[in-house]
Length: 82
Image (tube, rainbow, N blue to C red):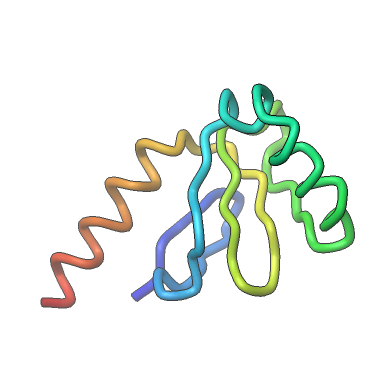
């Protein structure tokens, strides 16, 4: 199943490694360093400041959708698959 992460982009739920909120990224030197190190794989889907970071095997997405909303969507998809 797929989950909509913003700006007409949907990704497979099974490809998601992590969904992080903006506060976690801003307060963690390690996450900031991770984003800088993978800058070539970062895709900004937000016209305004991003609200969450979605890490997949291939890319890192800066999403305009809150991490809680993305988590709920991914849980709904998982429940529907059962």
